[in-house]
Length: 268
Image: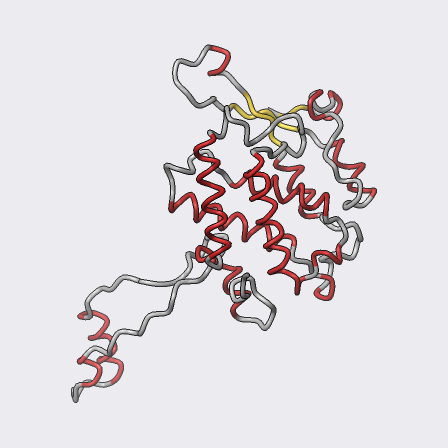
């Protein structure tokens, strides 16, 4: 349900996000005029009251998209190949790491979601606001700083909502201390071991050719190919990156160009 801009944003978020140093004047003026949305979101837990069952969540997803798209404090950032930055790649890597951790530890990290990573990323943009701090060749270093920021938020148990800073996304009521301790340990382990969840799967040797392709059959090449297609046994893929995954296009881009890659950097 949208809240029209004429009504203004709700009081807890009326001051707007901290974007003065890293967004242009035009974008900063445009953001408060955008509507916010209320999305029905039932709270977790049993024996909820009637009000709790009818709870709503304020969504700024479209505003966040606008901010991330218009991320530079200079108009030229990411408008040409010569002015590319690594902001979006850092966010993609962090989201992929969070998704990998949730798949590996679904029960222990049930409260964790990609929005925690996005919020840490937005706070980092407010601190590292100059475009030169996000140069494309600095991708490994920038990502490690972003990962360190998420670790610091987890260690302190404090991650303020970017639009409503009085609301803590890591408060004990929504993110139990046991899960937070587990998350901190998992993040530290990933850093210590060189981010194994972000590494592409190891290549495997191709299967040996079917005997039908090496036999001295009098059939022509076309008939041989058709016969092999009909009679070969089905096989399953054992390696690769899903086409629709967040890491898929990034892996392809980073491994098919000579640009520095977070996946091949050495970590200390």
